[in-house]
Length: 313
Image 1 (cartoon, helix red, strand yellow):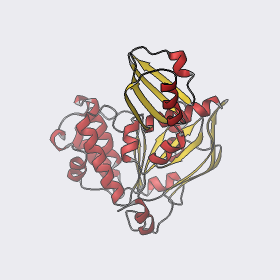
Image 2 (cartoon, rainbow, N blue to C red; image 1 turned 30 degrees about the vertical axis):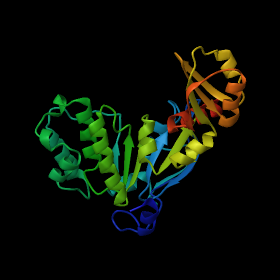
Image 3 (cartoon, rainbow, N blue to C red; image 1 turned 180 degrees about the vertical axis):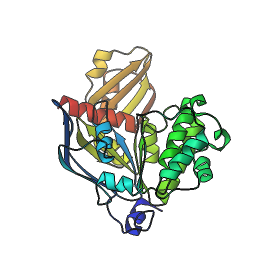
C-alpha cells in the first residue's frame, strides 16, 4: 500500500485518517541557543520520512519535542490530534533512541517480555523477537551483546506493540550490511500497514533508498521538504567526473558554473550548476579529460550543497 493510499484508509488500527505528526510554529531554546525555530510540518499515516541535518541542526530536539521529552517554548506539537504524552500513553508511538542504556543483567527475552507487558496493544513476545531477528539470541544476557545486536533489541522494544508511529534515531548504527538490509525490509512492511516511520540518519544512502519524503533541518528550521529526487533537483547542480594527467586546481575553480571541486590524484570531481557550459570550458581551456562522466548529484552531495548554501547565507 502506498503512502497516498494509507492516508485515505486511515491508521494501522482503522481509525479515521488524520495527521500522524503536526508541528505548528514550534520553537525551543536553551539559553541563547535556539535549537528549533518556528518549525512547522505535517506527517501523514503510511509515510516513511527521513530527518536529515548537520550536527546542531535541531534534529534531536525536534524528536524530543515530538516524544514529549521536552516542552516547546511556543507553538504546538500534536500526534494523531492529541498531545504527545496522550498518544504515547495510548500505545500509538514506539521510539528507538540513541540515548539511554539497556537493562544488563537480564536476557533479551526477559527485556522484550517486559516491553510487551507494558504496551497497551502488545504483540506476542515470540513475534517481536522474530521480527527483530532476535530469536537465536533470546536467552543471551543483554550485557553480552554486540553493538548491532543491541540496536536490534532497541528496535524490538520500539515495536513491541501495534504502534501507529515509529520514531527511529540513527537506527542502523553498528549493524552490518546484512542486518541493515533486513531492518529496512521490516520497516517497509511496517509502513505498508499504514504506520508512519520517521527516522533520523547520517547514512544518506538509506534516506535516498528508503524514504518517501526527506526533511532537511538547518539551524532549527525546515530547509527542505520533498522526495529524495526533489531534494536533489533543488540543489541545482550536476556532478562531472574525469581524469587529468595534471590537475591545476586554480584553473579548474575558475571554470564557469563550478560550485564545488575535489581533486584526488588524477581524478577530478566538479559540482556544476551548468554542466554543459563547464564541460565546454574544460575543452576550451586546452584540457584533455579522460573517462568523462556527467550525472545528477547524489542525495549526500545535494544535502551538502543545500546546507552549505544556507550557512553562507
